[in-house]
Structures are given as C-alpha cells and as structure tokens.
Length: 129
Picture 1: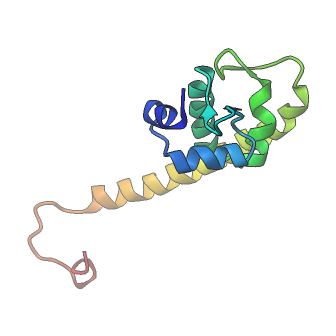
Picture 2 (picture 1 turned 30 degrees about the horizontal axis):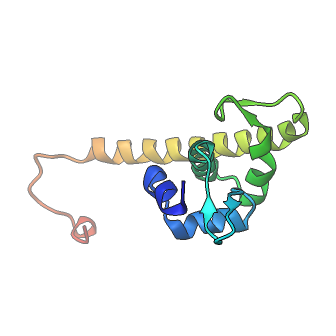
C-alpha cells in the first residue's frame, strides 16, 4: 500500500509517517518510481510506534525495540533480553507519573468535594474562574 493508504488506515499524517521512516521506525520498500510501498504489517507497526511514543519512549529506544516485538507487539522476542533493563526503567518512570497524576487527582477531588454547590456568594478568589 502507498503512504496515503497507510495514513488513512492508521490516522497518522503522511508527514509523520515520513518522519518515522527518517527515524528508522518504518522501512518501506522503495519502488523504481520512488514511491514508498508499505506492507500490511506496517499498520500494526505504526500502532505500536504510537503506543510506545504515548508511553514516553523516545524514537531511538523505539527503533531498537521494534525488531524485538513479537505477537503483534504483545511480547518481546527471546533474542532481545538486553532491552529489559531499559523497559523496566520506563515502567518505573510511568509508575511515578501515574502516582503523580493520582495525587493531583486526589487534590482536585478534595477541592471539588469542599465546594458548596448551594452557596450563591462567590469569594474573590473564585471570581477568576
């Protein structure tokens, strides 16, 4: 499939797909005409890239990780155990970010719970909102 079709199927812009290629995240076949030809498996690869980027991994780490991914991105090939320390660090970083977000959510929950919906008088501090 051509880049436009891959863009349509994945919801990722053509420009971003070209960037992924520049970063060695995608390796389409180049036709003699110069067109990029993508495989069906590249749809899943793009989805994996998006997921890993959303998890906070950088493109360098993703480029090293993609060849190790098996089972549609659900597992890691046995030949790639060297990636595990980096992945464990990323898990810890994500866990810390989740804990920070949960703490922020708790503060907001407390503020919302303390607000009196029946109060008609606005304080000076709340008028800005």
